[in-house]
Image (cartoon, rainbow, N blue to C red; front, side, top):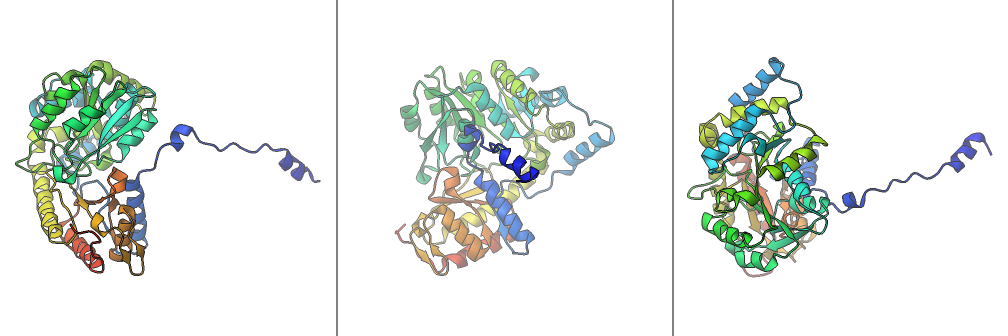
Length: 421
């Protein structure tokens, strides 16, 4: 036996096992589908991509210039872990003026996107065995974040006939002594539903009965809302400030997804815990992005004209899609009141054998069918906890959406609903 062979045989096999915590987490389907569609497009396939959750607009020029100036002026060093005083002060002013909730700068932590803010909040307040109550359909990451915190996600289904809004009676029936966190997202990803103030008040009355129960209010889409719908911050309701963690950011309203800037506001005890986690993981957000964030908040109430122009375009696109899909056989619609998503019920097409493709069994196979036959990338509803639906992002030009609708309509011609609608 050669020396090399002897050395090889003596080697101990490397342990490549992963943490059980990581193995329990599912990968994001929205990211996977977006990446797949992007790869197809780069390979020359004319795919229309309506899967990603980001505006198709450029960051407003005044915000971009603030970032550029920060670089030119050498503002490129570490900032305080919780964010610059300038930005946190601006956030406090915004929350007071627009949301009716008061915070001091030490009750704000700025992070690398609202996603980080949410994860840190879940990690900060949840203990092993705690329950995180999540209405479905939900943003894909909520349950996985609960799992990462060794908590148990408790999914509460909602109905399309109720505009996917949580029934307070269902909530009350599911709260237990293990319930630690209720997650609310309004306007909602993936449904576009907006919680009316009266419904939030009913929910707050239930929450108030349970001393351990906190609320994480994800308000990232607050400015992308269509009148007469209005936004209400949960922390502004009587008795809810003390138990609410409000998360917001710059990605959606200000078209700043790549800048990675979000924040959390809440009682100092909880926010300080989030700050501690961040200090041992990423540290502070980008100094350049924070300067841009200050400029964004300086645009005026609700983002001023720059944001209202975007919202007007989103509304026009929503109206086109609601009207168009409403004329298709076998499609159920809940008209979104905010965000830029349409969550359509296509379940009447399940069970149909599609020629040259196979059986349409669920939302995932229907999305594969649309990608294969119509070359349109959408996200299956099972990623959001509702397999009967498919999410369409209308963060694309009206011309693109018109072309996508015609492709989907053509792909459905050979399919007929198996169940009457």
